[in-house]
Length: 224
Image (tube, helix red, strand yellow):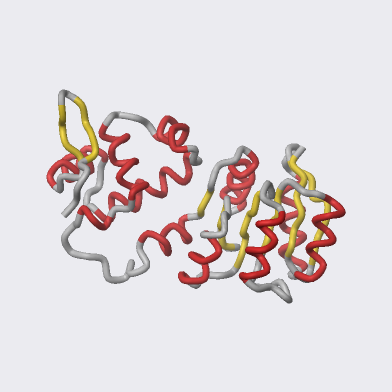
């Protein structure tokens, strides 16, 4: 049983999270916190496995306080479910060791998948957050694909696709959820200006992201 502490001061959000987790036998909400100053005592009292947090609406929150809290509770799985869409702030929070980051406009199905992914030690980011992180200038995308625009994680996924691995296999190898892999694939297709896995591989070869070496597909070490 995964014990969950919810830190949020919006009654509708608290009720919604409680309802979602009540439908899942794996999870139990052990407490609800509506102010940051109450959080340390609740963590000591309930010792939860997972903290669900909307830092944007929780009075008393600061990023420094969260950083110190995570240093103290290093095994705590942090699940952000928030109204925030500010790219620099999201990036700062993610660097603290968040396992899941979703916005409150995500579907119930997506949120439930995220809870199960985090319970299994996997990371889960919703499409909205992935778009913010991988393409902050999405409204003005480059006309021509550039190899250097791919992140290291995206290059790894390109390689595994070229090696004919399916989504589940890629997810297992990278310790990510299938949902996260699919979201990465979507971003890669957009960045490389292609519409299919075959087109992706052809474009990756053309841009020298991958190459054939001794009968195998490998990543190119240097990128222009």
